[in-house]
Image 1 (tube, one colour):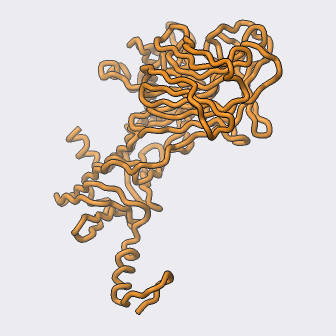
Image 2 (cartoon, rainbow, N blue to C red; image 1 turned 30 degrees about the vertical axis):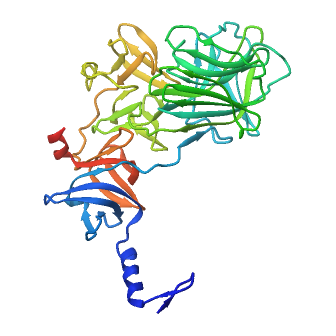
Image 3 (cartoon, rainbow, N blue to C red; image 1 turned 90 degrees about the vertical axis):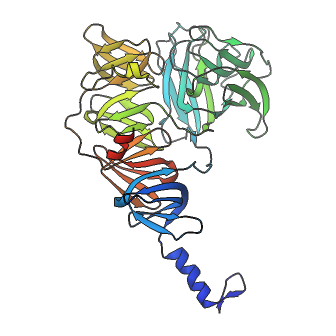
Length: 455
């Protein structure tokens, strides 16, 4: 008999059977339901785990566990992913602004200024710019796909009582007067939900709560087309300020904003604990970056200059040589418009359907700069005015890929080879190097030749 640490005992033979069942496979991490098609024509269905030897372990109910080497795979179709905690993005003190981005919205010509001291952030503008309108503001933002929750703790900036406003909001783009929902507060007038349901139209505040003044915690939630604005004194117990139903796109920009009036240009918003929680599955995330190999990455663009493109993919920062990037789509492109995005023809595709030929100089702060032979240098807002850009033709043709790995966020990675490490797939992409992807991020794997034949 073998004694157990929590009391009792089991026969030695039974103990050895249990030990072999759990220790001999070497599978690491949680399994995922999947249907596995192997090259011998056999189809197996069950829980799939990754083996460090470079194989899938398939456990079917009432059947023998089978290990299938990656080299024997034709296709793997994964079932629905298990629910996971909502991913949260915070603006952390001492760690810089990324992956948040800073932009001016409207006609203000003075750049926004963001500073941090002792864990408190300040968002404002340099004094001296008197050309501020009611719809001009500075915007610290991050992409949001689908439902989500945005929270901030706004602090009182000074004892001066004026009409300057600060708050949080969800915007269609950084273009002036884009569609949005925002929760604003001011020292003089209080605050409430401000809504612009049509592009180009001024925002409307339906109800003003005079007691909604800083210091205060603010929370804005999106649940489909329903938006809920709440306030709190401590960030734990919340009181609903107002709800509204507004039709907005799936892909939005979420963040903190502050306006500056002509009478008080020195105003700034002081805040901490800015965080954004993604509530829904992120399948179909934009922007999408197409590499010269044909791989498509869904991620937040941080910057693009004359040499490199930087983005956040799978929660990690990545950087690629510009010569390996073919195009960038800021939103879904209709098939008839996609035909205008030709490799080797650099330029920008506008939401009007027009294609402007020219060299794409930079992508940053929600704007793409293009040098056009016809129009000279032009800046276009994305998303909003610019739908996609093409950067030119890759320097050399990529090596062939054996597999295509489709992720749940809409990414599609070509793989020269697959490997396994610590319960993750390691994907050897032909031009961009290795990608490490968790098992529950994968929607499908198929041999490239098979995929091309059926798609």
